[in-house]
Image 1 (cartoon, rainbow, N blue to C red):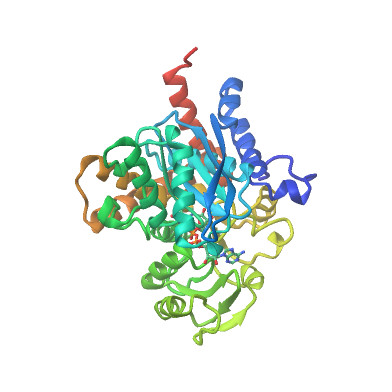
Image 2 (tube, rainbow, N blue to C red):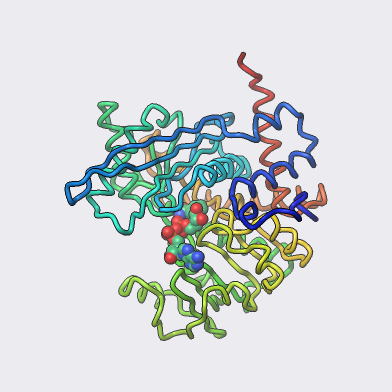
Length: 426
Ligand code: NAD
């Protein structure tokens, strides 16, 4: 099943995340017979904020930084979405990530809309002091647009719980009171939630187990290759290793590892913690990361970054199942190739929704001032992911579409229904 007319696109268009999002959105909207007006409303973000702001560097110089906050939809509740710090952040990327958040929250049926933020910077070359000053100034530049009932940021690539603590503190100073629920992914002692750090990886594990069940396959002997050994990839690897999956490959930016007998993930985690790289680990052989994506396995989990499965390599993928831990790892053109190969894909807006689901629980706990035990969060999280997986595969069967289009259709239908019920303010 194709995702639309994607045959004549250039590679630049193919890897533009906004184009990728729009291609899937248009295809799903057409399948849904979406009302033309609602199509226009949902196709574009409702607010895009661009800020240029100064930061004092450690060497005494002032540098200018550019940041974005895009709010795609707040129809179903406050906007929700991470903040990314990276040198190659673009408005189109943030736009795409914001709309994916709308669809993701709707797929798992939590009461949020979608947003995303980003600052063009290289966080790895900045000192802690520079990062703190940049974060605080960026927060103050977008302060009127965020808040517990407006838009709730969270960590993404290049940001972490320390970044969230600075945003929370800056916002609280301006409000003259402590407002923990303005961000999620915070440290535990200032309103963070048990289970949040590993929640995205846990969700990935749940949908892997559900995929096997759906396809009549077993966990035992199931070979898994994971790209990205950061928050999502390493937590998914550890939890799946503990469940009996055989993690045969791990690919990182600087190289990969392969062991057909399975990698001991606890030892690899310890090795990475000590050496800050997976390279040189003795429990596996070195293998180039690009080769690992194409190696033999039952489940491939791209959990690093966008556009790693494209028209250039999709026909060589050998996995039976792809579970998208990262946002946007597969281009729309690659989707068509993978569909023809009948590879079962669990799309990003379902596969990595464990993170935003746990963020929702963190926001609820902050607002209640009552904190849950980790087991309760995990149980609630796993229940939501299992139900959402069932919803998506049932929708796919009923409408004869692949899982990605089914997830988009389900999400668009839920958001469109809410907008129709609310009506238009004129
Ligand atoms: P992270 O920065 O913790 O980890 C990313 C890892 O991928 C790093 O170890 C990095 O070295 C590696 N990497 C980067 N580019 C690579 C490449 N080309 N090949 C191989 N490895 C590469 O980030 P994260 O939080 O784990 O996020 C990963 C992806 O998951 C992103 O797309 C993010 O948007 C998405 N995501 C994250 C969460 C979350 O809760 N952290 C939730 C939903 C989606």
